[in-house]
Image 1 (cartoon, helix red, strand yellow):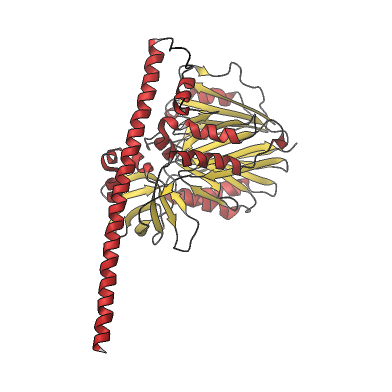
Image 2: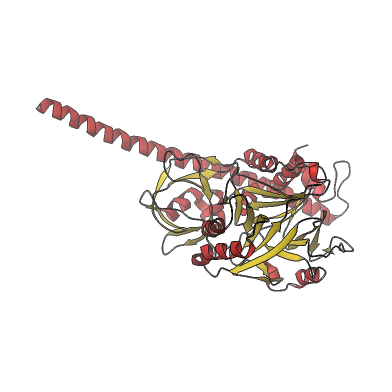
Length: 83
Length: 380
């Protein structure tokens, strides 16, 4: 069993052999499981967004660096030609 | 040394029928509770009244830790009677971040003497610059004195916090207990477990613990972009992306900073500690397994052994940001600490707005987004 599910059952005083003794206990279990699904989805979405944004930032930095290096090399070539 | 831990719940009341009758001048009462006890402090007073000779300290939290469980709207309590260790209480007002350094100095001056071995500090969580508080403390005590502690919390609301001042919950104070004598053994460990990502950025405009710009761009805008729709949850959701700071490229030691507040008008973010202009900053993101591993490593760093007998107290102070990220899995990190600590160790603690502890060794520093453990035991 996934350790999170095991902990959720333990926290509510339940175990895998017996169903929850009351409607309240059942609702609380469902609520906790639902919360962990939502959190997992949110975490995944945030990770994907971060990855996309930081990749874009890195690409932009790389492009800026390319332009700077290009203009420096051009300047050097110009100086050499002038010499 | 005798250690008891128990809790209070508004519905179920106290988790023990009879509270241990071990009041003395060498008894320490530690209480961590909800910020709502600012409105009605009855359970806190009830407990404190049982220990009239003891030193009583405590603070509000973003979650109370008791054993391997986390609670809200509750109280976690530890009663520790030392056999050989003397205790002294100190406190100082901290009405705004500007008073943080002097508050730290004042606390240290009240506690300092040649027998002082350690200071455990609890501070208001909102009106303080934790870096300055620590600087003030370090400026007046010997580097051999172990300073640990934390900043009070208020769930994910960031509105009001308290520490016990004159045994009553009050905002705007720092309190501390000094531990004296040769038999006290104080362990400490502080670990994060977050991953760095994205480019490193220069802090181009800041003042104290307020950050305005990174690489010439409003810092708040950057956070909103990364948070997407979760930006509506700021400042709490800002904790999903802590900031790693180092002073320059050759600096191998980076500190982690976390958000306390946002100012839409100034487009600024207020952090729990200093954000020096010119420093290098990099965003961090959570990795569940590494966070839990970090907690486990923090427990290992305390080097708590059973030499002190079966009685030891572990005070776990973990960042509210970790709770926000770990969600339903948060209890994994406090299970991980107890797994590592010697059998029979009692654990209480809280989710905080900042953790105070030395790195591996050396003087105390402010940390954010870490699990920070302080262990107390007495040599046989």
